[in-house]
Amino acid sequence: MDRIDVLISAEQIRTAVNRVAQQISTDYHNRPLTILGVMTGSLMFLADLIRQLDMPLQVGMIQASSYRGTQTTPGTLRINADFLPRLEDRDVLLLDDIFDTGQTLSALCTHLAAPAVPSASPGKPRSLKAAVLLWKEGRQTVTMQPDYFGFRIPDQFVVGYGLDFNNEYRHLPYVGVVHPVTPLPVA
Ligand code: 5GP
Ligand code: MG
Image 1 (spheres, rainbow, N blue to C red):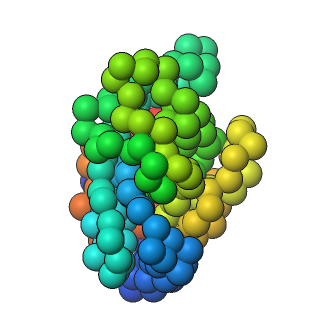
Image 2: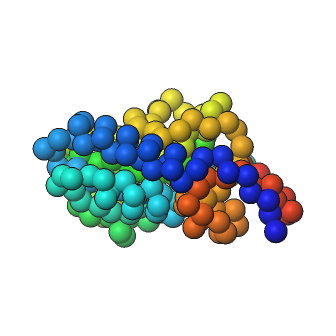
């Protein structure tokens, strides 16, 4: 069994999610907000956050898989738009579990602001921002920054609250640092 040390408790997460929900409620008051969760890591953050939002709201999911290493360029992010609602004239907030290098959210923003295939386009959002639960320090390779975040964390591989290691541990109610018996993925 891998050893997991708690980094952020369920209680601390609850407090941070409430704070982010407050900020979003204030900023998007009376505006046509659509929150798009990035599959699969955002599932818990999305579920907890939207239940704290007492306002008109549409919710969708977007899937992004990126190729890292030598194959990686901003254009190689594969995006599955099948789950997207119409985004025309909507204020769109992308929601992800963690901002690491920033490549994923940056590429998703570029894609949604100017979709590559007009016929399959969900429409151009009125505005586009990003929220993450975790912001890993010192890892960014892009100029964009998340507009909302829960916690800044050190450069460690974390699991739980939606985040996985080999598809395990997403269900943990806290965020932990995993000390695996098998090697960690190379980011
Ligand atoms: P980025 O494009 O910002 O480098 O990476 C974003 C994605 O990488 C996240 O949505 C997440 O899926 C994955 N990722 C980055 N850091 C971690 C981590 O510490 N733990 C886990 N489980 N996934 C991570
Ligand atoms: Mg992810």
